[in-house]
Length: 178
Image (cartoon, rainbow, N blue to C red; front, top):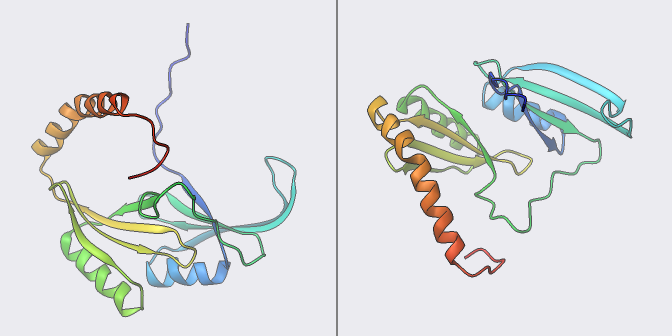
């Protein structure tokens, strides 16, 4: 008998390396409006015992989830993955309305942040994209699709993924993105 999966009730935090804790705080708290709610300062990593002085900072979203950062005190950021385009890895957050999306785009631009979009994703969501001071790609999005459209998306999702998997199985392996 296999143990059943337990319900995951939400995201607690996503953690990323940052260059400078204060620069990161200014961006997330002062610009994006996410309050700094917890700071952990340690010399040893609790899970491994490894010596690595750090500060771990947490910013809270309205739903109670967090984005968190580790400042290792060396002025370095996480390196991008050499096999992945920079647009692939990102965090997307939901806003309440298209007006909120427009206002956040304007706010970011007023603070010198380069913003891409508004991008329409198949009538599902509208999004803007930008980078934080650590090179982490962020997305702000607003859902457009009706409840019926969302149900239709869910009803066809497995078949669409199966078709993708079948197409990929027919392609010769190249090891390169095209």
